[in-house]
Image (cartoon, rainbow, N blue to C red):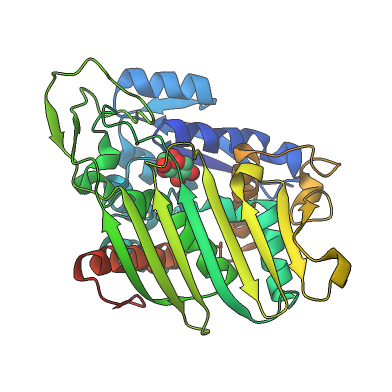
Length: 389
Ligand code: SOE
């Protein structure tokens, strides 16, 4: 019989909504489901927000006491969808209480902080996952398969970008995402880490980086509450402002353990780019390119393509591809952000049900955070920085 696992979700913002949708719909896509994800208790910072979130996202109970929620006997899974500064404390308490833990990215504000979570996870021996959901996109998983099958030969170059524009307007408020104490870093940790995850997933370990890191908008209007106001702007002016102490933009060169080279760019200030998360991988026998803004498609070129048909062609993902049979029956019907979270949720619960490791786990989260630290350090020193902790 399919087991039911009770979830305590800590946080009820945009990411909480995405996770709750996945809990509700995962069995509709994967049947029989590896387990039912029962939405038991939602924790938020005030009674009102918790009650609102519980009602909206379909949780039985609302609470403002995360310590109680993560130690309750009837809770099996703790889901952390809070700002970055609380990930470690909540995750370690949950792991010490023997819970399975899924945590939003970046795992922590720094490599050192992420390491404490990885160590707690190792000690607990429960299933742990860091939510780098974009690698669950079927086109991205197919790119990995092409690479593993040797379809593009020896990988030589990875070129990744994550460009958004929601923070390009200086009148956008000083939310937690612009505060080092809460976020750890800016574009580097928030979105650059998604590309680092792609690079490690597709090519392998990154051993050194050399980067430029810059902050263009040094001040922003103070925000009255702590809510995440992605893309908001307040043109009224004249109010108090506060200092932005994180990066707006980074460009990094990468050296991989297997000899490949690469580059990453990340910014949330690129007008006209919305969720421009891309990669190109060049190998000795072909190339693969992906852009999340066209997430059902993969561009491929294999060196043995006929000479009169050279150039990239489009593969539309569907039932023939990774997780495709769980999604829609015809290629290019169109998937979205929600599907990446459904697949992530399935893989996490399958790991729990089967007693296997989840991927990417807290060790990956720690290694990605250590690479983010290296990018920030190199931005200051202007030197190559080794990134294997
Ligand atoms: C804001 O840049 C953000 O919400 C990121 O934090 C997410 O990781 C990304 O998936 C979408 O954009």
